[in-house]
Image: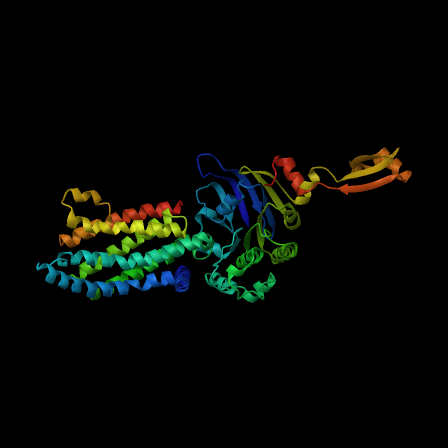
Length: 238
Length: 282
C-alpha cells in the first residue's frame, strides 16, 4: 500500500510539473486534436482526391494504417512527455534523490513511464472507436491500443537510456519515432524482404491489419518485450 | 547501525573498493575523508543500496544493503553534495512533495526552514536561491522524515563562515537527538570538529580509522617553536611540548629573559592525513 501511495503522489506531482511547462502541456492535449483532425480531415481530403482524380478511392486502403499510427500517437506523446520530465529530473539530480526515498528506483520508473502508459492505453482504447477510420472489431482496437502503448514505452526507454539531457532527448524522440514507421512496411514491401524489419514491433501491427490476422499481435508483444527488457537493463546500467 | 566487513566492489575488472572493514555505532558521527576518486561516494552508494553488485557484507539499519526492501529508506536521510531540488518550485513546495513520499510522521516544514535560517525564504522559487541557500535547503530535505541514519556529503560546501557554523550546530543537535551521521568531506576542520571517528580513504582502502584526537596524538605531541637574538641575529629553535623542560637552550633563554617569541603548534588532521596516506585532499 505504501508503494502504491508514493507512486500515486509521484505521478500527481509529475502532472503538476507538466502543467507548469506549456510545451509539455500542449503535447499532453494534442492526441484529441490529432484524433479530430484525422477523423474529419482525412475523409474530407479523400473526397476531394476522389473527385479530382476520378479514382474510386485514393487513401481509403490505408485507413487501417492511419489507425495504427493514431493508436501509437497518444502513448508516444504521453511517454515523450514523461521522458522529458525524467530527463529534466536527471539534469537536476532529482531522480537519484527519489531513488533513495520511499518511492525507490522501481517506483520512480513506474510513476514516470508505466502509469502514463496505462493512462495512454485507456485513452487510446476510448478514442480509437471515436476517431478511428477503419471499422475494426473491439479485439483489434484493443490490440492496436496495446501495441501503441508498448511502442510508447519503448520510445520513452530509448530516449531515457540514450540521451543525457533534455535537448538530446528531444532530438532522439524524433529519431526513435521512426520506429512507428515499421507499420508501413507490410503495405509497401513484399515478403520475404519485409521481414528484414520484423525487429520493429510496429511491423507486426502492420501485418495484423494488412493481413487481417490478429495472431500477429502475439509477435508484436513478444518483440516489444525484448526491446523493453534490453532497454530496461541498459537504463539500469546507465 | 552500520557494519561493513570484507567489502569489495569494482566498476570494471580492476578492484576499486578493497576489503573494507568498519563499524559505525548508533548516535555516532563518522567521517569519510579522502581525496576525489578515493571511493567515498562509491562507499556511500553501496550503503544506500544503489550499488548492489558488491562482495562481502554491508549492513545498514540491520539490513544487508543489496537486499533491502523499500522500508529501508524510511530510516535513511541523504544530503547529496549537489542540489536535488525542483528549481521551478518554491522551497516549501519541494519540502512538501519530498515529505509526502514518506508514510511516517514528518517534521514541520516551518521548523526545518527556521533551523537553517530560511524561514523568510520558504515561498521563494529555488531557482532564485544562492548556492549557500540551496545547500541549506538540501540539508533540511534530508531531515523531513526524521531518519535515524543521515548521510551528509560535504554539507558545509559553499557556505559562508556564519552559515557553516549554523549548519555544524544543527548537525551536532541531530547527533544529540540520537541520530547516526555519516559525513563525507574534504574539510579536515569540519571533520575534527564534528566527527567522533574518521576513516582515511585512499584508492578504495581505509588507511586509518580512529577519533580525530587519537589520530593527531598518534603522530607526536604539540611542538614549541621559539626565537631569540644572538649578536643581533635572530635565531630559532624548537622542541616537543612534553619535553620542553629538557631543552637546555629554551631553559637558558627563559632564565635570561631573552626570548623574542614563543609559539606552540599541534599537527592538524590534514597533516596526519598527508603523513599516513602520502596524499593531499584535492
